[in-house]
Structure formats: C-alpha cells, structure tokens
Image 1 (cartoon, rainbow over the protein chains, first blue to last red):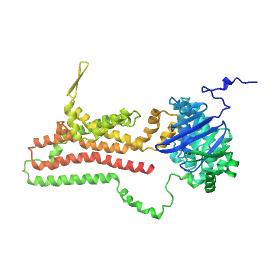
Image 2 (cartoon, helix red, strand yellow):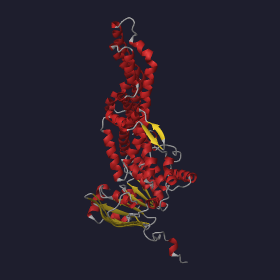
Image 3 (tube, helix red, strand yellow):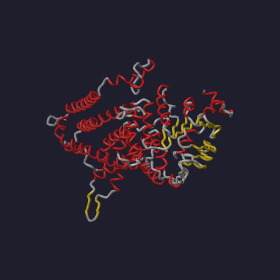
Image 4 (tube, rainbow over the protein chains, first blue to last red):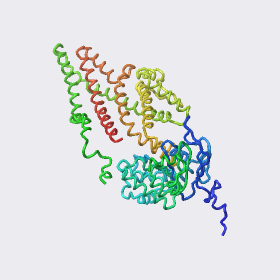
Amino acid sequence: MAADPSVSQNEYGWTPDQPLIRLVDVHKAFGSLQVLRGVSLDVRKGEVICIIGPSGSGKSTLIRCINALIPVDSGTIRVEGQEVNDPDLDKLALRRKVGMVFQQYNLFPHRTALQNVMMAPVHVLKQNRKEVEVRARALMAKVRLQGKEDVYPGQLSGGQQQRVAIARSLAMRPDVMLFDEVTAALDPETVKEVLVTIRELAEEGMTCILVTHEMGFAREVADHVYFTDKGLIVEHGPPADFFANPKDERTKAFLGQVL
Amino acid sequence: MIRDTSAPAAPAHPLPVLLPFRLTAPQRRFPPLRLTLLHALGIVGLGLLIAGGAHAQAGVNQLSAFGVIIKWFPLLMSGFLFNILISVLSMALGTVAGVGLGLASISLSTPLRRIAWGLTQFFRNAPWLVLLFFAMFMIPFEFRIFGVTIPFPDWVKAVIGFALPVMANMSEIVRGAVGSLPSGQWEAAESLAFSRRQTMWMIILPQCLKRMLPPWMNLYTLVTMATVQASIVGVTEMLTLIAQVHAAEGGRPDLLAPLYGFAMLCFFIYCYPIELWTRRLERRFHLHQ
C-alpha cells in the first residue's frame, strides 16, 4: 500500500528516506585560519560514520557545527531538514535531536551521576520528573553503571564519567549522536568499556558520527569512514575498502603513521 | 581494578622526588586555635606592659589602663558591635549589588557589559575613604517618598559608602569565578539545549560558589577593618568612642596605647579566625580542583 508522503514529512519537509544530516560546501574560518574549506557529507538514518584525520584538520570543528555550537561562515547544514545556519534557528529543537559527547566528559561536577542524566529532560524539555527518573535509571543500567547513580562525577573513573555523559545525552532521546574523540582522554584500560557502549548504541540503530583516533574501532563499527586533512575531506569510503586500499597519498601517509 | 576504586585518592606510595612538597607539613602541627590565642596573648601582654609602665609613672588616684578598659568595656563593646553591624550590612548590600554587576559584566549585551565594566573599574580603583566621603555628602539625610519621610542617618550612609567598593570587588570576584570554569561546561550545557540563563543559574553559578567563597571572606575582613574609617565622618563607632573615653579620663597620654591596643585586639580576635578559615578553605578547594 502506498503511504501518503505528507504523513511522514516533518515540518521542514524532510522525509526519512532522505539523509538525516546533509552538509553542503561548509566553510568556517577562525580569523585568518581556514578550518573548514568546503566540506560536504551525507549521513543516513542508522548509519555510523567515523571521521579520522590528523589533529588540526577540522574534525572537532566539523561536528560542533552540526549542533550549532560553532556557527559556520557559508554552506548549508541540514539536520532532518532543519537549516542549522538559519539566523532564526530553533536551537532547542535542533539540540534535542542531536546529542553530543565530549573528549573531556564535561559532566556537571556539582550534581550526582543520576542528576546529570535527569537535568536536561526535566528542566529543558519540562518532562515529568518521575518518568524521567525511571528512564534515567534504565540508562544508567544500560551503560553498566547501576549502583553509581548517587555518586558525584569526581568519584568516578574517566571511563565511568564518559559513560554517564553518554547516558546524559541519550536521556534527551536524540536521533543522532556526535562523539568528539570520546576516548582520547581515557586510560587504555577504560577505553574499551566506552567503546563497547558506543558499539551497542550503533547496533541498536542509533545514527552516530564519531571523530576518533581508534582506527580498529572505526574499521569495526563504521559504515563509512571519512578522512579529513586541512579542512577538506580527502577521501572516504566503506571501512574495508578505505583501510585496505587508500588512494590518496595523504591518507596513505596518515594510515601508515597510526596503524 | 585498583585504579577504579582509588582514582581520586593520592597514590599509595609517594614518589621520593615529591617529598620536598611536604614543606607545608610543619604548618599543620599548630592547630589554628592555639595560634590565635598565642597571638592574642602576645598583644594583651604588650598592652599590659605599656600600661604597667605608664601606671608606674601615673599618680596614685588614677585608674590603671586595665581598670579604664574594664570600666568602659560595655560602651567600647557596643561600639565594636556597631562596627560589626556596619560591616555585615555593607557586605550584604555590596554582595547583592556586586553579583548583579558581575553578571552584567559578562552579559551578551555589549552596552550592558560596557556600563558594568565601567562601574566596576571606577569603584574598584577609588580609595575607600573617598567613596565614604562621597556617600556621606552626596546622599541626603532623609528621603521623602509619598509623603513619608525616611531618615538616612550617618551610619546608613556609611553602610552605603562601604558597600560601593564591596560591590565593585564582588563584581570582579563573580566575573573571575565564572571565567575560571572550563568552557566545556558551557558547551555541554549548550549541547543539552539549556538556555543561557538556565546554564548560568543551574550549572555555572552553583560551581562558582565554592570558588567565590574564599575571596569573598577575604573581602569581608577588609571591610570590617575599614569600618573604623567611619569615625572620620562622625559615625559613633568604636574608634570614636575610644577617643571619647580617652577624653573622659582626662586625656592621659599613658592611656593612648592601651586603649588603641584594645581596639586592635578586638579586630584581631574577630578577623584572624576568618582569615584562617579562608586560608583553610582555599587550600581545600585547591586540592580538590
């Protein structure tokens, strides 16, 4: 039976068969420093994409532009059809769709783990506190931190803090998750517990964009890998292909260094 | 595994190369209270020595310096309590105004930020005594609102005069504390769709309280000690009363040192524990951040 297309269209005329996120020719400069020099990429629903590249190549800037933490100079970014570069952007609407996890966890140190998870749904989305608490406890269990609900971030290890940060972001029920080098500040032995959590999310069908230095992880979970250098996407492709036969010299040089 | 359970704690075995840091350890051997008493006793002793010497030279019918202080003790104490009252009220007024000014100085609105910056710098870089004179002579002695006359006695004007520099310093304390938080806190709050106002009140300021407390307490001791300047503009606080007591006792020169020494002692006993407490808080917060 033919579904009425207007039913599944959202208010921006976006339908789920279109890319969830679409970047077209995005430019960004900090002063005279060109950080992004025309980046275009599409992310479909349920896709996991990894962005790799040398430091200073604009990876972190790129994903910060997607949830409007950094305004872009030109080009378009659409998240489910919503134009992020619009001066009248409804930031609340955008940010409840896009979750973000940072390298330095950035938990709120004056609130317990559970409160960290609950704060945004209760105060931003004005959801019922009781219901949010039930959901937050379930999320804490999901990231394997049952029993740590009433602990303050300062008493948790880096890996535990990062998993709370993931739960905090998930509590907003986002459609896409951005991960900005989330394991870069972790001890090697706690990296794995965070990666396991992210892999589970990916397997559940969450759309994920990861900036990462974990090549093994990228090869394993990514549907598509992008290599950026000096503000441009140099090369991209499915991981098997990308890692086995890099075509560009810069990609080869980079992979030669890190693998 | 060990890492997980003892992450925030110090390592079990300190490295030998770190040992020189224990230079601070001897300080802890003296509990703060004993140090306070030690110093206080020293001052009292000094006072008694001067008083004793003066007493030996004085006539037979005259009260000793100690006797004079005992005799006027209730009056002098009421003066000192007045100093405390002025300091507490100026601090309260200045803190409220200063928090407002500090928040304005980090607001997104450029004109508001400029005005707040100007006010802060102006009142921060003016001598406190000048601000006191300014308040004394610029504020009328009474206000008339809707036919009701509200008197503004000198001491209220003094409170306002002291509140001005407190406000400016508090503004800087707020601005500094907010600026000292890692920018990741703002980013995280923003990405969770908190508004700027929510971020400020629910995430940034609660964390700043701890950072602001030591400098705020330090500011308070400064205000307390500055309140004696009110005597210059005619407020009957402790120093004014000491001058009056001295006159009432016939203006004996041998009473000057003990009487003013007594004033010093009162302020010392009040301010020094606050100072110690501030330092302890600073050390504790420093260790935890």
